[in-house]
Image (cartoon, rainbow, N blue to C red; front, side, top):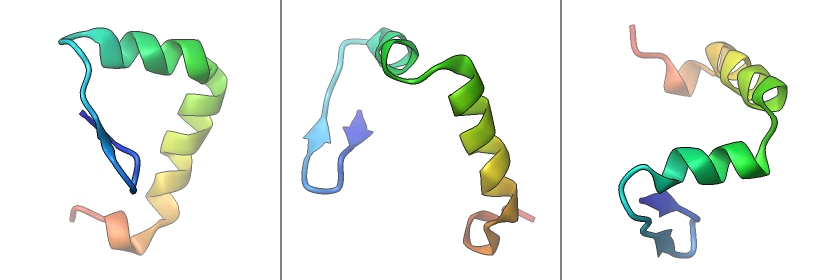
Length: 45
């Protein structure tokens, strides 16, 4: 499932990763994940 904010998109098992890889480069995805470290609202510890 992908939450789009205004809707939820359901995909067959395993298709989410393929879709992500088609839409976002590996470097852009890694940069986004690294940026989450600075968000206190997403802190888990």
